Length: 437
Image (tube, rainbow, N blue to C red):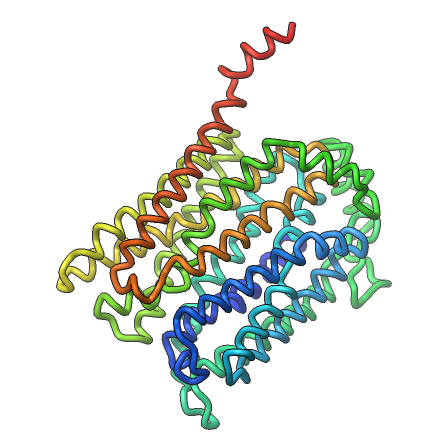
């Protein structure tokens, strides 16, 4: 089916443009624009702030105009902003471009998730969400290897390597936006793309089959409105289960945002060469792809939502425990130290899509689901605001304080997942049902 590959492509580009700066700072970017590590972290926080501020407005626009048009526009615009980062020459320019990148990226992830929910059944949710996040994971991993090659362009046309990193990746994203504009339909009712409104992407028979299977699974999806009523906001805010998932995301996502930004730098501190550290930082990110898919398959196949989220969070937390221990080892054991980084990268991204799939099952209609998607992605980006400052210059190279804080935050997320899982387990539901009788 064409929907999921296109959404994966967009997420892949988003992650390339959001994460390529982690590779740029292993080059001479900080020195060239004369900013400190603390100032760099401020820019990362502004990116997340831009996303948080415009997440829900962006999702409301998508709901009104359709994903084919809105996601296409977003992809092209954040590719354009990413390209402009190549010409930043000062701290002010750096802050402006990071904030604008956040504004233009806002809404793409919850918009993509909501789009998936309208084309697939509930039973397919976790696997499709994980496939969508495959674009994110592949983007994280590929960015490191692509950067390893592009940063060798240092000196071409008298420019630093990080200049070409932004130009090439940004241009690729804009080209991908054109692809979405040609191929991504809005909905069953309007199966046409933004750039070719007269060309029907699916045949009438295909549309009937797709619509019927989704309608039989969830009749509410057939009656999607053109705007989200105020009552839907109230309903979503009153659903306490959604807030549990939002808090799980807040505890899980912040730690890895900072760790992922400085992973190449941390690996470099083990004694590896600068450009080599970018390539080594890709290993765990590639390993996460099959592991994540396995967990999502178990979640869907055996309906083990709470179990898989709790296990994934625990494995992520173990990564920071290993890093806290291994970074104290002597430099001759750099392979052991590097193993801690690989473990963390392999399991860090896994809890988020599993948690989203679990949360979507707690939503009572498409409007609530759309708002819930925006809420949980806002939580992820709010977490990124504090996550950007966890790894400080006065804590390097061992980052003892950062790893201790990360362990504590994810431990809270594990406790919340256990509570949510236990509250809705068959053993807990049966006594409550008896009391109601």
